[in-house]
Amino acid sequence: MPGPMKIRATLKGSYTDIRVLMSHPMETGLRKAQGKLVPAHFIENITVKVNGKTVVKAQTSQAISRNPVFAFRVKGGNKGDMVEIGWVDNKGESNKTEAAVA
Amino acid sequence: MLALRTSAVLAAAALAIAAAPVHAQDEKKEIEKYQKMLAEGSPVELFELEGADLWKKKQGPKNESLEKCDLGMGPGVLKGAYAHLPRYFADTGRVMDLESRLVHCMVTLQGRDYKEATKRVFGNADKPSELEYLAAYVVGKSRGVKIAVSTRNPKAKAAYELGRQLFHYRAGPWDFSCASCHGVAGKRIRMQSLPLLDKPSGARRTYATWPAYRVSNSQMKTFQWRLNDCYRQMRFPEPTFGSDATVALTMFLAVTANGEPYDGPGTKR
Image (cartoon, rainbow over all chains, first blue to last red; front, side, top):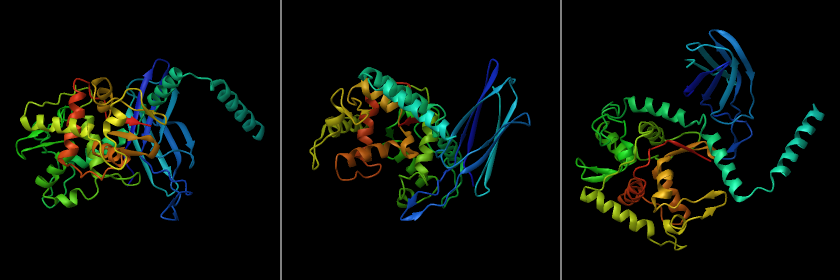
């Protein structure tokens, strides 16, 4: 079961600053443990929605660290807007969470 | 694409040359900047969230959660509890630190065996230990609370005195003590400047940011681990988890840090 996620979205005048923290092992598939390769396991797609409208779609790779942090700036926005962020990894596992803009 | 990459590499090289003649003062500032960047959006928050779930999870033979665990402020009171630990607990007649008290709660509330509860106290990046999650959650509830560890109880006073002696006690194949590295100002090991831990000037900030998340190996580290690893680095025999000696040393450092607003769980390089 995927670990927790945390979103922090703040209105900063003319834009909204969105930060998201995700728990994920982000295995490259190149690391060995006890002589055996650890299979690749990483987030492939990230979607950011504000009030149901997709504002960011990202494709990510093994180059990103374990438990990554992402930050986005979205033009405009209002306090109370719902930000929903979800990810899907190469094993088909997924997770999503939402938070209101503060 | 190739041309673009080359220019990026060149730009990076030019930056490196420009940044080369930095002075010690600038280096320190740069390290501080780096540490600030690490702390923003630190995965330590994920450990706090997982710890909160684990705190409420019913387990053990009695199928109980830890929600009634008394960390010194009354059963289930977490706010500010860590800022007053280690402390003397009348129910056990011992001075206990956070980790030994958590294990005590696992044994008494959840009915677990002491050996089972302490079988895996230090985890790794793939599988953190239960205590690492719990420590992150509990200490987070003391953020902003001033550290106020009391030595009014005679046993707490004795632990503080023992801790101070242990801090200065030289032994082992290298004839080291904690004070060899942390008792002289201005020492460093590779990039890390070593805090002066027997004086409030160094102890306050350092103690107030432990336990902490280590970015370089993606792990949450407890204070018991910190002491354990210091002893390993000094080539001492491994200290027993939650022993009177480790609690005493924690007591000495905590009392020296008294007055500092607690600012953890921290994030370290």
